[in-house]
Length: 170
Image 1 (cartoon, rainbow, N blue to C red):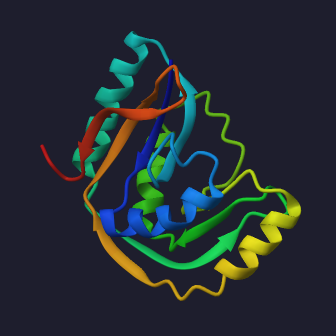
Image 2 (cartoon, rainbow, N blue to C red):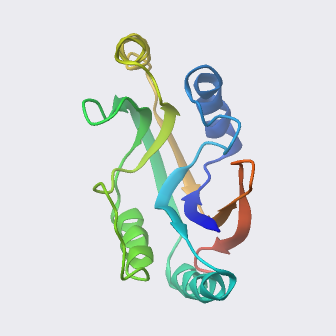
């Protein structure tokens, strides 16, 4: 089965992201707006129980963190993704590193760039138009995040929560 690890932002930030995602994101109906901490990976039931235990330990020793979204950016020319850029913080980087240390065969393709996708699977022309208009948005949103989630993918492609981990809680 396929699993992933994410942070879901507040409803307010999700609503803002969804106002763009419903038009520009092909994954809009499959998963709510999120910040990816671990790209999708395969695991069986025994392995995911072990991973969940390790994630629980990471969560207990981590503190709630600040999520600061401060602009719209793009991954072009690597790919045509437009996103809300999240300011990298020491706490967020540490959480990311702690999670990835639990995956010795980690084959992460890209460096960690904290973000919330708002548009993807766009043609070059679509990307140019969408990014050109959205990068003018004056976005400045800060919130505290106190949890992250282990998700699994259903047969229809949708993602749902397998387990939630509260930061700094026993």
